[in-house]
Length: 493
Image 1: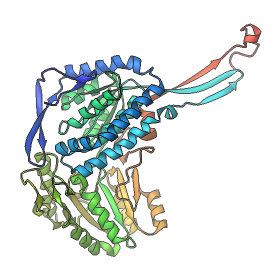
Image 2 (image 1 turned 180 degrees about the vertical axis):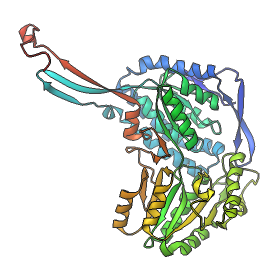
Image 3 (image 1 turned 135 degrees about the vertical axis):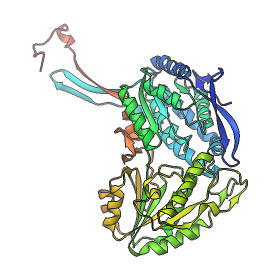
């Protein structure tokens, strides 16, 4: 059984509840995970609070030394972690390896914490009065991460939070919990003191206790928009600062002058990588003007070559659970009934390996209307919709009218059109001939509209800002050459 990690070691208690962890490629239960009760969450928070008293005063050199060592260990053992992620999530090992490589960027950013926490200083802001600013940790923070990136998303938050002097209680998804324990073990090996990072598994009981616990000062969350809204509203009502990243419906706009082979390749890789289970997946292709028929034909031909299965040469794995696979599959029938053209039915795609897992191949719809559920809903699976637009202006209006604003991309060879697009589009992350514009770690990740609740994006400069509180000090020192007496300057200048 997969258990919690509290105060620097595996929790040795007996859980009152547990959940099944599946191997998505076979559909069989592979393990069980302990579900935390309120008392277990409280134990983790207490451990974090006790550790905070000393960790907040740890030198920047000590914190960065731990981060550098953790980075070395993670890089050495990333292959092992990729296997763990693949076994519980279902994404192919190469995809899991890519997730960990991007996670390493966030760890490397946190290694620079001595530079990142430098404040400002103004000498003689008034006569013999200096003013300066410092950044201090907020305290115990909670991180609630999703199933789709069980290694990367925790590492968006945990390294920065810890490097800033906070202590952390991580609640990973109960669908693929082992990666978080692996990371906790690596942090311990890197020299992180007991209690600075704790991991509790579970469901809504654990989430609600973190949101309500008075000792938890901040919450970072990634998940669907309805849950992000709930986390934000509940957490802020209990006096916490909250960053809650929600869902997405990412559009890829293809202009008539675009390289259609490049666009088709991008649509397939961005739409079906990780079986579409990622918030930055392209789920809508907007074909502008006359390019629709040719673009759909090129995407269709490439889908036929996508190898789906669990073998080393496969490009796409199963979905994470049977329940989720069935929900995604239901959209195929809904799309047809609402009038879209089902160009490629993923239920017919050949599977390499066991057929009893949670499989659904790449699916392609054409002539999708913006009132159809396959357009309006975040499907979170390997379903790609093509919408036709008569002009650039119509395409931009379509994207801007969507309630989500996470990521978008434009494919064009016209620099003027690209520059206009990046200025006019109401979305947090924009790609120009780049289908998945996830920022590098020294920028920050986050969307607009219903894709983000709160004003802080993940990792990068926003991460440092979120996990610290600014303090401004104004000081006056008397001149020791005059016996420490005031030299006659007004006290309030």
